Picture 1 (tube, rainbow, N blue to C red):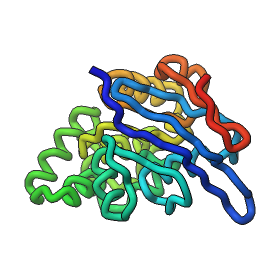
Picture 2: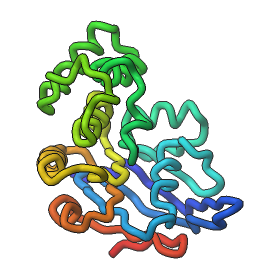
Picture 3: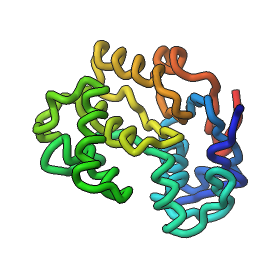
Length: 218
């Protein structure tokens, strides 16, 4: 049975320098969706993802998670337990002394004990074939390794929705194929920003386009 996980109603946003980037945008993400979000550079795609998880204050419109309107920072803290954002640049997301500690950060914030967080994180790293990186520092990793570690740090929290911002950036062909196979195997609903059309064609089951601050389903 299909369930609506995220719903956006008449969401608008503007910047002083750039003007209006989102003009009464409405759409929903349902279970089973793997939606591609396309549009020119600077169209507002990353802004939209950041608004969805409360990293940018909402100016107007509504954001609903599991049918509940999200208004306060407390609401968005809880939303981020269910909606995981994988940043365009992994270096914005990895900041702990080791890979294992980066992955443990989310479970610890969810209230798990140190032992529970460590066990969950080690299991997730093993699931993604990254257990050999546990004690490494993120700055020592390749671009592909960093990308998979950031994904592990989000997946370990068992979100219902994944927001992926240019997930194939800086990946070689082998790393890109590994990421694609992993994402294809996941049950989570997804909203994926990418200019990589071959990648999207193998992953997405629906397309949204952001153009001139308006969002349309293709």
